Image (cartoon, rainbow, N blue to C red; front, side, top):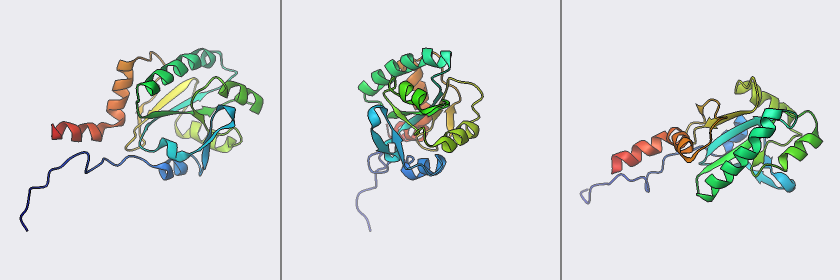
Length: 176
């Protein structure tokens, strides 16, 4: 049949982003994340977002320096409505240190009780030293920035987003 030509649009053809199942699989079957104050959230909170894995520990002085800086940056980018999440992967040695450190963080964490998952993630992502911040693609889950610890600016964040949403950006460019 005839009719109007089909117009390709990002609105009608969304770029598929990763969903909770992918993260559940990648995070050792983990069902939920935790946040300070005992809040729990399903892995669905990560779906469709750029994910930053933050490997850190309370006992590590450089980590303790970087965390408040990252927290301030996180709040600013969230206030700007950016689609991303940070997930803290603790390398702490005891639960009280983990709990104390988590209180300084506005983002999610792999629960301390899931020690095996946390260790597997540090190995899988090749973390040799901390603090370490991996930026994952929202579309493939691949690492797009190997270690983003350093200067945090809106310009740097925009560069991460361009990599994390590369396919979406290509489609939007074709439409214009």
